[in-house]
Image (cartoon, rainbow, N blue to C red; front, side):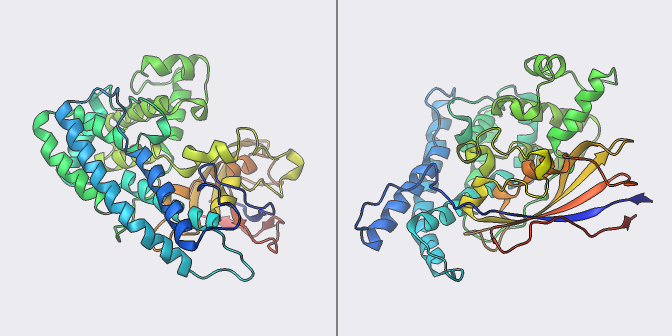
Length: 401
């Protein structure tokens, strides 16, 4: 038996939303007709999506593969371009909250959230057995699997094509056919994405690296590009560039397989570990590094991420923290998420599910446990945009098995 204190805290966002960093073009007064506003929003959304399907000119791709990949990408952009007006109309028909004024920027954010979520679901999606086997083989062996040219936030499609480039040419027709099928799932009902791995692969890798530092058994040698920064300098995972993060995920994929983990679980962990969430893609534009620091005397009011305000992200996170003998927090992790996002209905809002992770963990690491508390402590943190919600922490739990 272990004793767990389960406390619920409601964080409320009181500040107003502000313009998105990639907002639709400014609308002059008087406002253009609704049809022109809709056309401007759709055009802007198309441009944003096109960024994630652009193949860098300096990517070392076979000409035939580049041509076929560009054709597949162009066909997909055209199909989604035809869907966007329908998504916009659907959002207009969605019910408004009492007293809510919905302007074009609200509509843009809601449809853009849906578009970002389709990117995330596609990233996590699985293909047939041959596709999964070929993907795993490349991730195990190819040093090119994590290479990036250009802005790392928009490598969604290019990273998949680089993997195909590293496969034997005989595999390419079948793999490209599966890529088409995966893209055709956009905007359609699909199987529920596999759950977030627990622990996250980067956290599991960090524990293995800590054991290395203290002279423990070595699972696999770290790639030289990471050995100095992670072992010698103690660089935090969050401080690494996205390409280096991918290399660490690739290392942990190989280490996990070497320890007997199931291939499907290893691939799922890699996909979540390299998932470009909304926070990864745009978070710094809304919440610059250091802006989310919660003062020790303000534990009842953790900062509500501005990104979450702009996209109307609400819900709850469950955080588990470990304590030392004196009751001081050692580490904390998010163990469950229940998130809702305006514009995303009928499916998990995967791309926003980690929006509150950093603030939740930071809150859990503040202060000390109550007298007599033992491992682990569990917090339910509720995130609400309703100013009427209570912001006081409440202890609601007791013993758990």
